[in-house]
Image (cartoon, rainbow, N blue to C red):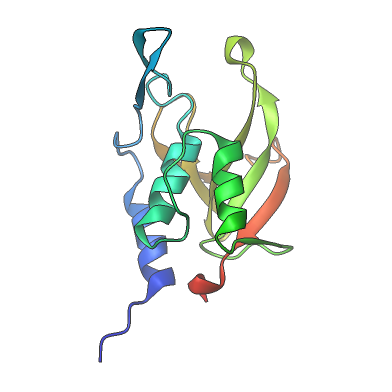
Length: 148
């Protein structure tokens, strides 16, 4: 008998994503013009998180916005919890990114106060403190029963 270890695989997928360029670009036609709406990784957190989640069918689709990712998560069995658990999705508060406006942020809690999310400055997933060294407030922590 072979039984998939979803949480273990989920955590390894997230850890193995560090520094990959895979989530940097998503092209759309905007006003008749082709445009990279993720701005070379600057706005890729939702695409990163939803792509990882879609691998184990923990969401229905990939997304390019935090709002659509969270809506999909809530429709597919994700629920809020009060504690940080390895593999949980973290929703951070919106911060001002200047000309691109205020943006919330998504990523994954890993362990020992660390998280992995897409860096808006580097454009790739990176490991960092779960609260960005106390500079960004966590709004919600999401969990899915399939990770148990």
